[in-house]
Length: 315
Length: 321
Image 1 (cartoon, rainbow over the protein chains, first blue to last red):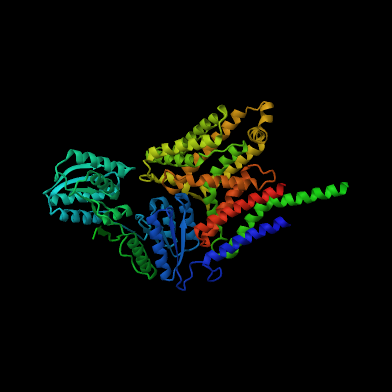
Image 2: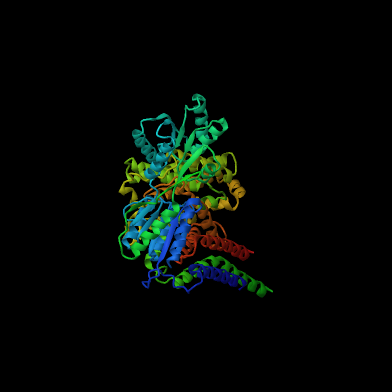
């Protein structure tokens, strides 16, 4: 009998946990989402809650949704795409009012997106990508970020100088940034590209550092190199470290992403002078805004919406 | 005197029964709790079907783990094997290979890699724990090389999604495949020489050896079947998702063993068995499904799931004493 008792105690424990956490203890067990008296219930799903930027987005969406009086359910599957698909089916069955997938390639849950679409549940993406069946996705515009960064750099150079390009064209996002640079270079004939180097990934900081050391040795004159354009922050960090170690002045390094190490170096006066910060908070805001529109029966502003990035400099 | 012994015997068998069916009680209790808390979503025919499809991958990969555990060994490479299976089948499908072949090839690869693991473990008498851990690393590296670390999804033909996304009447093909495999391997383990040899080796390796059973042969077969089922799981997963992630199978590795261990608590003997594994996977699946429907935060889901597994193991231990 003792065992039976323990068994039921165990089950009671589960029941208590479930009851407490299903509603934050506010009101009974009426969790079912599809009540039409205005209270919306949204489900945020991601496999990467352990990633800093993903967590930031999820938290922001959660806070904003709660401000709107919506119920929020956050689901993390710890890198498991199959699990993400299963949990998405569960929330569809539970008639959630909206689904947000964060930092997820929507192609991995294409069947579930279709299922949600058939059930009339809108699926939003935050830094995820857009495929058919979704309502919209909010992300960064790589072209815009690169334009912002490159124009700032060229202004600093007064439109002339000798540039080193550190990039990695196989990455689609970095490719877009580099192509934007190529286009802008056509407009600035006095800016000469000394060389373009492919940074090795993984290990971009060390790879860029070694490349920069070699390039510094090869171009010893003071104004032989005036700037380094890096496709993202890590090679910029490596290049700046090499320049600092070499003691050379007057070389401006720029990155893109807003990586915290790079931001710190900019504030500390290293050769990295600027980066563009991806606006993850902005993406969350867009998702919430568009969700409000959908709940009010309005059309969304577009299927791919960009959160404006911000330029970060020492000032 | 004999009366008291008899009474004791009866009492023992009652408490043993309790421990034997404790996990089943818990499973039923979970269904009841979820049904009461969420009658509109959980306790529906659609959701029951949904759960069978969701657990199909876990059941198939865990059957393999059940076989290896029946000969008292471990295979820690099943997660990596499933990832490889998924990636290979997706790549083959993209290359235009017929769907049947694109599933068969990874299954054969899984079988062969399992054979190799089994041969290493039995011939050199090294710990299966370490051998398969290393084998998992090798497989993972190979998968990474094959994909460059990125998800395989571009140009996957619609036909490849047949196995993972087809319904026959209302029943998902995946659930049907799962049930067929459960029946086959239940039969193999319970009613064939192979199964009896597995259990004999698991029960007493020395005795089996003395009685002339080729331990090496049967253990190697267990590893090969395990590898085969893991690769099949990966291929089916890729078919369902319409994409293959280079680490997509990892999530099933620990859960597969959790299902096997839960399954061991279902039978009084406490040895791994196919029906028990199905039951264990069902409990894990019902928990994940029900707690999600009730909007329990995922961290709390992990806590609850872990507690239930530990509780099941404790009950069984108490019951056997």
